[in-house]
Length: 372
Image (cartoon, rainbow, N blue to C red):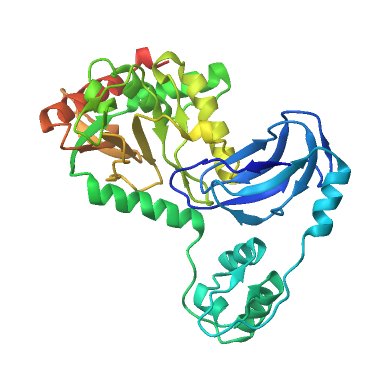
């Protein structure tokens, strides 16, 4: 009998959800092949078998599981599995002695988390073992009670909150802002979109502009280690904040300086689809050494994002703002502006460095020929 243990997939999570088994319980496994789909607060990952055998599932689809937990066994034969099943006894749902902690099945815990049923409510049932039927009964009773103005935060939102809290606690952040005329950049984006069929936008050009300045501003792409050492990166891997209604994701455009504008645009289009469906793979969310945060909803001209722990810099872009200015001949002309916001870890980056990066990115966007 070989145990299949759940690896650590996301260091921010203490538990994951086993979405589904890709092969039925009791199947014969030939070797290393995908067995189950597990979802963290950010991504979905396939868990592979560790070798051949007969699969015996311990954690059902939709249940919570922990890193290091054994989620299945592989038996050498069907007879060995049948012997194991015959020896396994199901516990009875008896009343718990005073002060005893109940045992809560994974399925019951997952259902409780989805419906916001607290640990105190589960313990209040007074059972030794709490199963899904017990949670369903609590949910039915809650549904018939008067409506409450309170609601439970989702696991994904609690993870986002933990990252924000860690950033606020550990990163002494400072900020700088620049006003950028993006008339030429918008025209370039339009031309690229027509020529390539990709949806090229200002955030696409910003990602490219930021990545192109990697060599000139290495501290902006660096990481500060716990022992006070600054670790610079060899290439620009630009993360992008993205929320399509299922929580905040930060997919990464790897080697962004080497990619064309239309290729970056295609990646962002795919990322938006995955953000909407919640189907990111862990590799797509890992490795960023700088972040771009688009806040381009109409009317949102300025934003101050957080610096993600492990990075030193994040750049935001607001929506386009039309302004009428007089040209050299005194003729009023409409200009298209955005505000860039740069928030940086002041332990690593000083104001002069931040202003220099903003100046360079501003020049890239105002004369954008190299960003195509």
